[in-house]
Image (cartoon, rainbow, N blue to C red; front, side):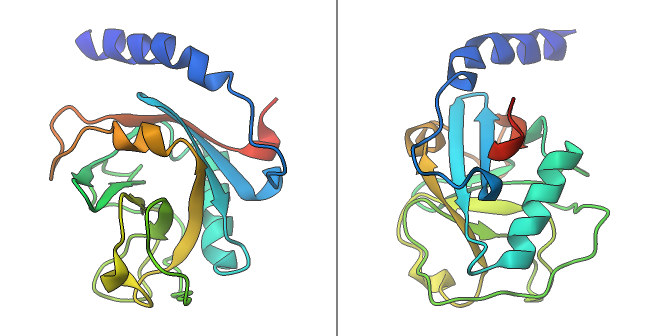
Length: 180
């Protein structure tokens, strides 16, 4: 019962964020809108760098896979990780097969979105992370799939922890062009 009230409260308080306009010039077909318990985050997907990974994120958003998924691992000064719509704790993936790495020379800096994976480079599936600061030690080792174009202030408010106790969530994730 408490969880129902918490979800309802999150939706009520997030309603103003849901009505925010999208940034001008945004390619809506290649952007996702993440409405979180803290507000709205808009990510430009880098189809030029990681076309398979960008398509996967769009597919999972359209499947509703990311809705109500927690930020299960959030490390101060490093990153906020989410995207486990299977187990909600960072150990799960989607029904789709893992993706081959699409590494690039784009550096991991504040606002870059990368695909999470295991120690196997070709194991990215559904989970992703948003970096809080420079993370150059990830350069060329993780797939850059996008960048936050609006809402880093929201990402900054996400509750920290590893694992996070009573974590913030992605309430709803949509491809921007699908928003009515």
